[in-house]
Image (cartoon, rainbow, N blue to C red):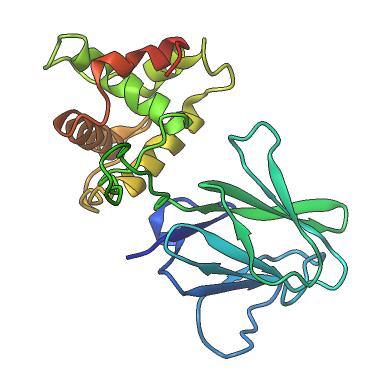
Length: 250
């Protein structure tokens, strides 16, 4: 089972993403020259990027970054962390990255280039205070402080408000619902979080033959329906948690 997903810039779907199982390594750089002759490789076609720039190694719930550059410091940003980031200096080996979502930024001449890394297997424990035993890992590990939970709550809200057969909100309706608590939200970020939730909750991909119409199409609607069905069936979102879409304390 994969634990880390690397999303190159310009990625248009799962086929262009790179999935790493625990222990697997992905090298990246300007040219596709593999030192060992095998293994996955991410080519970043910019003259300012080193030929062999670095590598990522996946573990069960996080990943490490090795900076093979002799001069450049790399930055790993947490897109949800209000500026939170870590610096990986030249030559640093296996620096651990704790973020569930990351943006690896490489200085390249006068430009900044990079790629995204997802670590969807971030696990969370049930509250086992007073039991005296080992805590139990949740089967569907969701961080209710993340924006993806806002999106999931907004999708589930109509049916949790007492309308079990209500149509699911459109992406545009989710955007409008979340703007008061997430001013920067837009159609693209909502769709991105829906795609990420499908990965994190390990939904089966829709049939390749499913048509995709402008504005979401059958494929996105099927993904939303599957997410809401799973969330309601296993109480991943409860009615008493819907305050998050209104900015109330979690």
